[in-house]
Length: 465
Image (cartoon, rainbow, N blue to C red; front, side, top):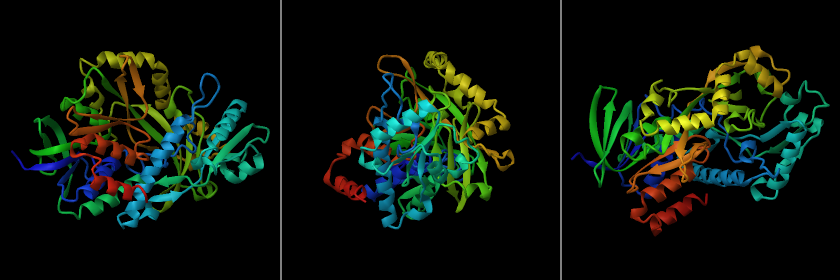
């Protein structure tokens, strides 16, 4: 048998990297191998250009606070996301204090604003504000429906807008713009200096086989075009959309219970500083389609590579790829005899989503600009270009009642002996990555007594930063 390593991590995104960092802190002598199929790290969903960079804390994302049938507002998810995001902030603060992370290079303060148009939406936002303001994390939230004040908060959005239009906004000044790929790079730069951490680029994990007390991982070295095997006590699959394919090969998931729904996305991008200098906020609004949380438009001021940019989107599209740099055959490979029925039933019951994605896929640039004009009336089309963003793969699963369900969020899946685990799903994964990693520690290392004093004390130190 090949040498047995302590853990193999598939993928070099922020979740895999955060797990590697925490394991190194908790068990500094463990041998860790990370495999990435691309020539560089953090190139897929974690890549700075493949997401909006929003530190999702529940401040401005209106789809986290849905209106219920009785006309009340459920804020529980916003409170939950806020709590989970603060765990990530504590972890990154700890890394900064220990000179592993340059905090000011990767996390920038930027106001988070919710902006709405129309009587019904204004009433909704006011109710939402009054519920959230009672909680400590939201008690500095401001609300305004005054044109003059909103013109100071979001001058670009208010410019050219009729003063008779009913509008309102909430604002929290301590929101964040986060470069998740740079966080990942800086952590890996630190880890690569350790003799027991090994990062393998251009290495594709093609199969995983359980051997009761360990796992055989088959890896293709794309640098020299040969395949070899490595054995590990533990495996984490953080391969983004491609995770499902590896779980199927490892026979971890019941093929009757899981399938996938890949979605591609685009943004409108402006680098015109005359525009950018008028807008310093992340502005989220109501969903275009009430049934589809991914249809929430937002205008994001960002800092990438030290430069300010402005994004509007996302525009979602149908895709059969699981990764931005994946294959158009990915989705077809995931279809098994056992899950065809699940896929078909989900498609039929979510026909509104299919129609929405088809419409978005066929939208011309001029139609995308027209949507932007609704939020930014004086838009000049020549100031904006279309850029391709990342791939997201939503989960399709059978719930406990054997009803199909399309899941917007993250879910941890693991083997019966808990030595292999994976994260399925998409947003808000990067923002809540530390919470996901803490859950993984509890799941994967329960037999090592996750709560023993050494680990417990170290985690307490990290999360008190």
